[in-house]
Length: 178
Figure 1 (tube, rainbow, N blue to C red):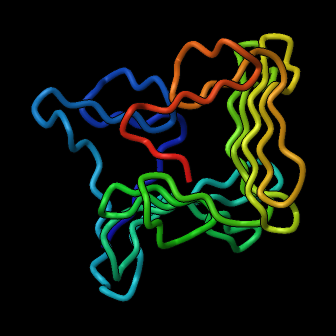
Figure 2: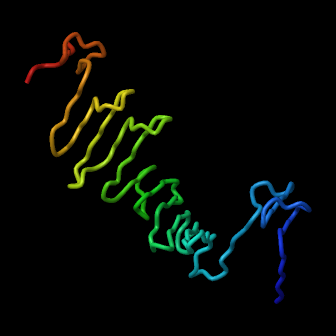
Figure 3: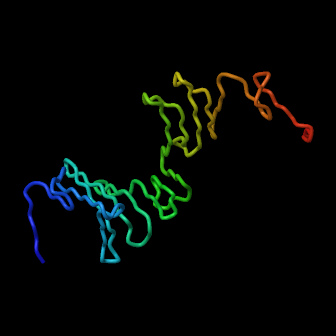
């Protein structure tokens, strides 16, 4: 067993490394670095240590396929990509393509300037909400499973794409009134 020390930059496959460690290859296009835990009880991964000793890791769990992102400073898994391709934020067992779990587990869509355009999430009392905003970032659609909901601006059509009034319900000929 030996060790090596390099004072500046290390190049593997290159004679002019651009960073502290620079790995280059023209013969192995998709596998430049292999991390392999030979102990079946240990995860394989990469640990990043930032200023102030904040630690964040990307790991492949020892007992399951997939990958997860772990905040070691706060001892919390932040995101997982399961072997199924499902992505979990706030859960280590995502059951859908995108599974967000937790208090205030909102999905926010913003425009290029950072203005809110749409939000899907939950209230503090675990009820669902859907909010859509116009180009002025004013709420025009707000659906709340535990409180007031509203549609502001325009007309609403049920069974029609061209409502003639504020609320237009169109029945087809096979529908009977209940």
